[in-house]
Image: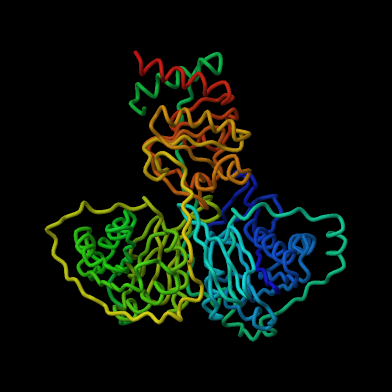
Length: 265
Length: 332
């Protein structure tokens, strides 16, 4: 099975909240002093692709759109075991929304061709939009299954377990299809030394908008259907009453008494 | 000006009732429709659901479009999408609101892209911009570290709303509204990805979403055994047990217990967070709780910024004493 996985370079979601800063004038967020990483959900999608490849052979191509894509970040997917890396890297792609981004990714997927499955993370950890996968499916007219916790090849198609609030649904689809992957599928593997050495030798392909038939006016910020009016940090007024006591046991007892007094419990 | 007018709420149904989140969507939808001076319509989809229509009217709808056919008795994303597409093309609303539910999160973006429009998912606030009359769509981003306000250029402006972020109106059975049947023929060929089986894995006891008290554990619990102690406290308080993401990823507790951006979003009366640092993505799932109580050995932990009461200490020592004292107080 030939699989294309869409991944994104993001500011590190695991960095301490104190390093998270918003540049209000530019409507941009950054993690001060912390380098960017591969989006965790995208990494999970790469893991899902590698599992399918191990089970049934084929090729895993990673596709990533952005600007200033650090090679050590995007090449991690190769070090994990992906075969090929295509970067949509150009200033023209900057500042897109779900629509502009998905349109470019879909155009690149069509140019690449020869694929059976497109995998995306369930949502990116920066925008939390959760739209890229479904958008690619609609643009390419493909079946779409979201929030996969298990994907298996079955009778020329796929059997997918889709997470929901009560458990999961079993969804059966023909191929080609688009599937978005949720964290329940399991932790992504670490790159091996051998994988890192292999990744060093692979040069990513870089496709500009013209390479995928996208006009500058359709790419990035020019291709948006939505406008970001404001980005802000909600303020939490810290008013926590810490229970007193000389020992943890005493503090615990005081907390219990206080919660009863305050009619919380 | 576009010929799109009014607000449509897709009211999801479970059994013979609209979901609470559908009532919340009608509540905010009513306000937006009144601000625009336009109509609020509900759309309900299913098989044998005609009796459900009055509930949408009681919750604020002026009109209910009923798509009722045996073909839609069971949820299939592709078929429901086709039905919604037909309804939206016929009604031509300026705004479409859905719940950020298992189905809403997949239907909303697909509907938007199918119609050449845009969607914003998981909104916590919606308002009409006084100058432009466009919908201001506020949603958490960066795992809850920040919020973004979006507007969409094209109609319909499609959004999903986060559970418990907006208030439903008190139901008014005397409200009058028009019920319109929308005949829809679903071609079976539209179902390209088919749900063949539904597996329920809910943990026994009180459902997390319904519990008044939730006792939640984080990475610091250290293993499945620790969750047994949380369970003891939850049972004592007639509550349910939840978790942040790491315990679920480590299989200390079922995935269905996960509270947070990628788990359940709950708003109980009391949320007791044990050994939870309080990452933004976790707080997204519980910040609507009325009172948060935190037990954590790190006094700098983020959770204390949002907690009302707390203990700085090792949960292994704090929790047994806390449980014992609650039992003593209850017996006194």
